[in-house]
Each structure stands twice: as C-alpha cells, then as structure tokens.
Length: 373
Figure 1 (tube, helix red, strand yellow):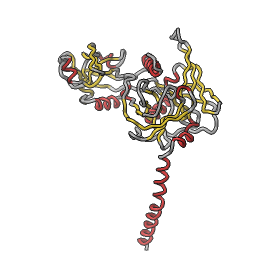
Figure 2 (tube, one colour):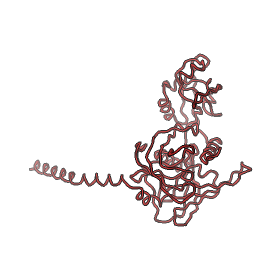
Figure 3 (cartoon, one colour):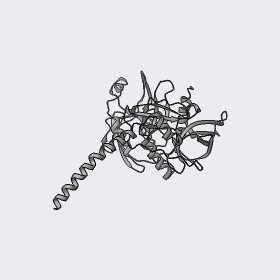
Figure 4 (cartoon, helix red, strand yellow):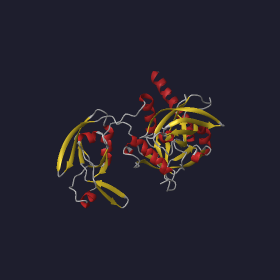
C-alpha cells in the first residue's frame, strides 16, 4: 500500500513539473528579453544626473571646476555609486532623478585606482528603488546591453548595443591589470560616466566609465563584480586594501630581448618601480633603455622576475593569478635575473596607499576624454 502511495505521489510531482516548467521557462525568457523602452521605464528613475562643484587648492589657474556625470542607487537608503573622476575634490554635490527636483548628496568613500566612488542622498523621493546587479563575472560577448545616463550633461537618455568584448585591460594606470573592463558599442560619452550598463534582464552588468574619443562605437564599463566588491569594502572599511608590490612591465618577449642583445630569461621584465613600494624597498631595478617597435613601446634593462614563491612566471595569466593571490603582510620570495645571473630576495608586502599620481591619472583621463591634448 505504501509503495502505491509513493508511486502515485511521484506521478503527481512529475505531472506538476510538466505543467509548471514551461510557464517558468516562458517567464524567465520574458524577463531576459526586455526591450529598450521597458528597460528605460523600469530603471531610469533610479539613475540620476550628478552635478559637482570642485575646488583644487593646488591649481592657481583653475581653482574651481564644474562637472556633470551620472550615478545610480544601489540600496534603498539613498546610497549611490558613480565614477571617482566625477567626484574629484567635491565641495558640492547635487543629484537629480528627474522631475525638476534636486537633492544634496555627500561623498562617502572612493577609490581612484578602480575609479569607483560612493555618495549618499539623505533625502530622496519615496518611489525610487535600487538597481539589481547581475550575478555573472562578465556578461556574454554579443549580449544586448543598454547605457543609461546624461551624455554631455543633457537630459537622461538610453543607448543600446552589445557586449563587444570582456576582460579588456587598458593602460590607464599601473593597477589596470587588476580591473579589466567590459567593451561595448553602446554609445558612451562624457556625462555618461558613473551610469549603469544594463542587460536585457534589467540587471546592472557594469558601470559606464570611458569612451574612446577618436574611435567609433568603443566604450568601456567597469564590471558589476568589481563594483559590488568595491562597494562592500568601501562601506565596511572606507578604503580598498591591496598589497603594494609596485612594479610594472610585461612578460619577456624573446624577439625584443634578442633585438636589444639582452640575455635570454623567461619571466616578467620590470620596466618601472613605484618609489617606496615593496619592490623599491627590496632593491629591484627598473629599466633604462627605451625601445619602440611600431605601436608597442618597451623599457628594457630592468630585472626579469622568473619565480615568485617557487611558481614560475611563464605567461601573463599566470603572473596575474599569482599577484591576485597575494595579501598585505605576505612574505614573498622572488627569484630574478640581473647582470647575467640569477638572484633571490625576500620581502614583506605593505598596504598600498593612495598616491598623488593616482589622482593625476584620473585628471589626465578626464582631460583626454574631453578631446583635449
């Protein structure tokens, strides 16, 4: 008897699944196939125009500057996120969600290396909601995306496109390898900075950050995973904690090494070293011999790191994986090639501070984005 009951229950469960599953699949497909007008209607109220008055005490010619960007809500308590370069030296921040009403906002925390900043709106309309983040590390290449913001300081607008590429490393700063971008052909212009890049499920997949001023249909967004992680750490600690290794360069190109008549050594060629970093304190050396081949440039003559903690430095992905595994306070053993021989050193990684150059990099990028030289 019990066996019959169990069989009957199983048959009912299968029948329910057969009935419900097509409905669930249809609902999921509908949720992730939203049109641009629906995306705009559902998300635009949570996206704001950000107006900033900045004062730079170190610039005698341009002490006061005015900036316009975009930000969006990430919780129901008025916490918003935007690009750090939108809020450089803010003395006054005003946000407008639409309808002609503006609200004062205050800077909470930010990180110029990732170009992410958090601000808080203490008073806001009651009909606003936080935008949901996508769960994947990167959106699929070729997937539809929509950029919402205030390009050129104009009214709130939406542009559409696809994800052109992911995991794109741009030479913006020495830490760029740790924060690859999403590339999209959705139009991104000055003023879009800090706005959301949204998929056709209505989820934030990135924060619009850069446009290529002398190219067409090439824009870049910080991935949602980076934005979410930064928000959590900035709200918890007030800063992003990262180890200070302090080197830049690339994997040794044998053709280039042969051309420069340098000894063969597989590994990471150090081009420059940040003063005060772990590499500087340990005595590692950067390069001194500039070399340009077509569009590529090198600085040769520096140490070549062959191993870190016994792991061979064979390619860039291996190098990035090793570096990302390191933490502040870690003791590392470095093997490197110099002056025809192999050497070894040990050093402890300090926390990397925010350096003045980190801010200057953002100023240069904003200046470049505006088409100036």
